[in-house]
Length: 225
Image 1 (cartoon, rainbow, N blue to C red):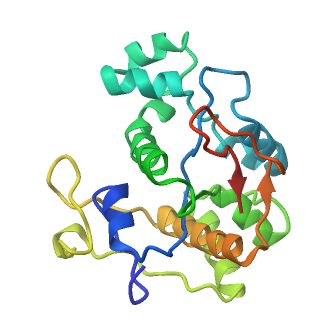
Image 2 (cartoon, rainbow, N blue to C red; image 1 turned 60 degrees about the vertical axis):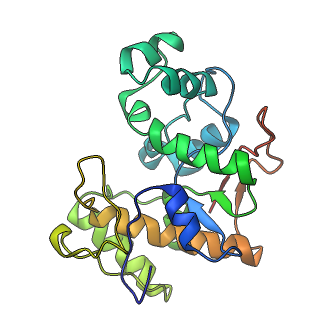
């Protein structure tokens, strides 16, 4: 966020390069992956799901295993990658494998000192004192989330300008060459993730699990808020 306006970057490496080296970046992406598929996913996934309860727990998807990511790097086709993990891969997970790969490339090369995995619904639960019932893509859900942020004194950035007006230095181009569109619920999620990252820096953030395991690359598999 710059001057109260959300900024969009072409990729994770571009974002990290644009920030000061002492900035902690919260990501709503899995950091640290199991080698293969396990029921319920990582311990962090299952614990976050349980904490959010029956309604909001459905927002926590199981992180795809590393075998899926490695197969995607060789053959980025849904059915092929799904077959590599015996069918245990949703289209939702498949369509963000490219983003997971960007984060994974960075943390494997640079460590986790500047990157922390955060689930926005855990942040909103912390602000509300209870899991939110309103879906984030509804008008009521967005109003509730914005009100919680503002009540806590958190600045809610304005949405990036319309794509035709986004300056190249602020927004990167997607595969089509056009600046990416950003949904309002994504801006609210990014805001609470930034708030949670500040809590990590302050030493007041929650963590699941309390003693996180590491994957075979030494990356902690944890979720914070």
